[in-house]
Image (cartoon, rainbow, N blue to C red; front, side, top):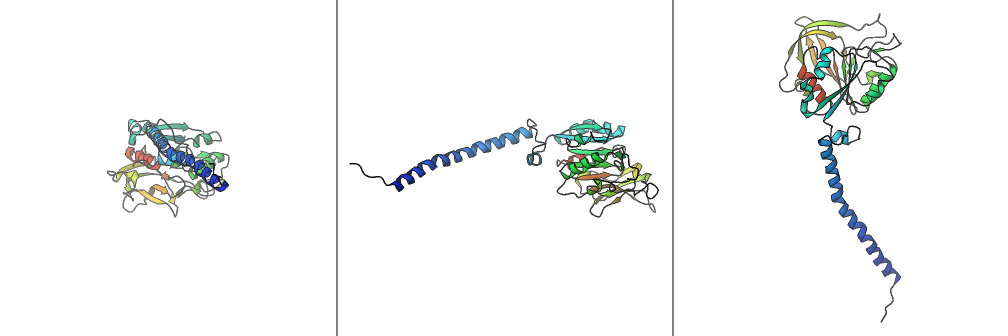
Amino acid sequence: MLYPVHHGDYVKRRGQYAGQPSSFHAESAIPLILIAILAIFLAAKFNILPVDNIPILNQIIPSKDIKIGVFGNPSEEMRALISSSEFQGAGGIAVRPVYQDKLDDRSKFYVRQVDVIILTGEPYCDRTFRKAVTDRVKGGASLIVIGDACTRVTGDNTVIGWGIGVQLLSTVMPVEIGGLTPRREPIRTYFATGQIRIINPDHPIFGTAQKDFAFAGDVVDVTPTSSADVLAQVDTGAGQRNLYAIVEGKTFPAGKVIYFAFDPAQARAVNLFKNTLLYLTSRQG
């Protein structure tokens, strides 16, 4: 005997039947997603898959390589230090430097490709280059500035310092320098002897064994900004004026910024500079 089938019952049963495969596939897909995530994590960890330019992943899984852009005219000591064996085995990473001596419109493209920007040995920078550095730091890259690097603008002699001119580097710099014209406030560099006195010994760039150390060399006279953290000074002796040596900028959520008033490579502060690179790239210090 045939029994009539109500339309509502048919729809209900049809809906139940149609919904089961969807739920089943969703549940079965979860293990596959987890396996895929684990595969990506392991590939990045062992440097098979570069994640430097992948948002979020480049913060969770930093690459083993530290890509450094050295912009300007680094000292021979700095070049030798970066290419030394200490830097090729630091924290299980490899330091890959990119050197650019002309800080012009073309160099801004290299700024976008590195993890750490180092400005050193060249006071003159193109306006577009200054803007590229500022934007890159605000976008998450880290910055090391040494001495009076990038304090002048090519083609404009009225600019002295990071806080004057278009696209102000001062928005990311932890120190101030110079003034409006050379006659008013020239940039002052002193040859100082004494020792580097650590103000913040718990900071990662100093490591666990770093102590005050003897110093003799050129130091640029700067003034920390109100939000900066002074990490070390050059102590020139009783009755003498101390100079700010290492200053960190607070640029959260942008990248970290460390300023050196002296060349750490010429001061033979190998561990100090290595720890700085590791700290800036969220490795160990």
